[in-house]
Structure formats: structure tokens, C-alpha cells
Image (spheres, rainbow, N blue to C red):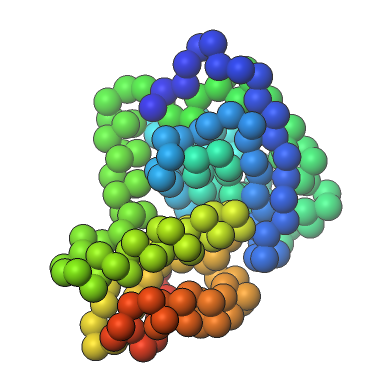
Length: 204
């Protein structure tokens, strides 16, 4: 998972997300293996695991960093507006990818922490065919759209017709994500998985 020394020059562009507190920075080069997602909610969580996340947390407005296959979602506080910092932050991330290039540290403790982080972000182990089907629908139809908005969704449980998921990155704390969850994800799962009657988000 360490970055190769001969990686091509990276370019980065910024995208707004439905969550006004987050912005998505898309890289022209892969950052993590396909399907892997890491989230850091404090500088301490990033310390010794991701030099990229460490650098982003050096900026005083940063409150969260989510890294996916080819993007970094940054959550900020209300100290400054995106208009004032998004170009600087884009250059900051791009410069790191072009010089240092590392998304993760290569030592064993860092990689073990990254694997644990990724596992905590993943789907819960399915208990049967219904849950396997729910996960398959989320992966095929929902996850690409959610990641396109700089977020992440994962299955947590299915009990009494209620599917519980976790929402991370730009989806976390975003009012419009609840509309998407109820109007989009819930309707989709009810149509494609018999027995599903509701989808709710787990409180983190």
C-alpha cells in the first residue's frame, strides 16, 4: 500500500459535495486500492498512519479526512469559507502527491492500523442470504454514487425489516444525505430485497 517511487505526476481537482462542510479532492492517480476507505476524525488518528492525512490536519480548519480510491474528502470547521481555502488546499494535496507521494506509511504498525481502520469502515459480516443481497445492492447501486459525492456507506445490520447503515465523509451530518437515504436508498432496497421496509443511519 506504500506509494511507488516512480508514480506519475498527480493532478488534483476540487468538487463541492452536498455537505457544505466538506469538499472532495479528486486525484488523477490512485490513492488506495479499489474498495479501501480510510477515515480520520482527528490528527491523533492520522498520526503514524497516513502522511497525507497528517498534512491535511496541519491546516487549522480541518476536522476530518476521508481517503478513498482516488479522492480525499476534507471536512472543515466554520473558521473560514471554502472560497478562501479550497484552491490552497487543492495545491497542498497535489504538492504532497507530487513530492512525498505517500498516502500510507510503509511500516508494519501503520499498515496494521490502516487495515483496522478500513475494516471498521466496511460492511458487517452478513448473517444470511438477505443480508448478502442487501450488501450486493449497496455495493452495485449505492456506493459508487455516494463515493462520487465524497462519502461512504456501509451495511451494519438487518432486523425486523429495518436496515441500519453507517454514513461517513460528506454524508455524515449532511441534511441532504437523510433525504437520499430515505428517498433513494430505502426505496431501492425495498424494491430489490423482499422484507426490507426501512433504512436508518447508525449514530456514530
